[in-house]
Image 1 (spheres, rainbow, N blue to C red):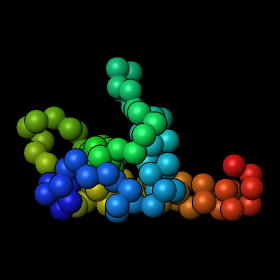
Image 2 (cartoon, rainbow, N blue to C red; image 1 turned 90 degrees about the vertical axis):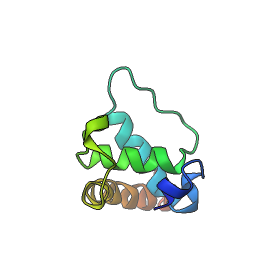
Image 3 (cartoon, rainbow, N blue to C red; image 1 turned 90 degrees about the horizontal axis):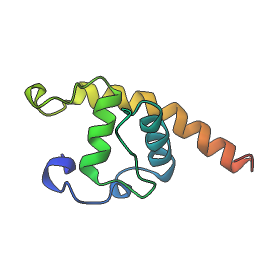
Image 4 (cartoon, one colour; image 1 turned 180 degrees about the vertical axis):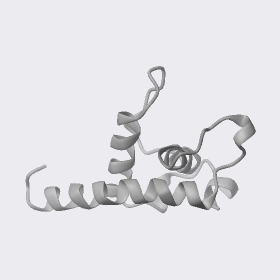
Length: 94
């Protein structure tokens, strides 16, 4: 909902630092060749769009806005990565 009402808000208001790192890593892995992913904190709209794309949203204008199912699929993809990053960082291995 925040992606629609406050699209320019920083994504770190709703996502943990580990989730943001996982999202950025996964988006870089699956990014299009012409797409560049910045290192700074994405906006709420960008973070939700990336999650939806990871969850299978086509991203075409005719596809409409991403729904709860595609966003959930994206979250299910990044959650284990975020947990792994957190555990590795806590053990000093990252």
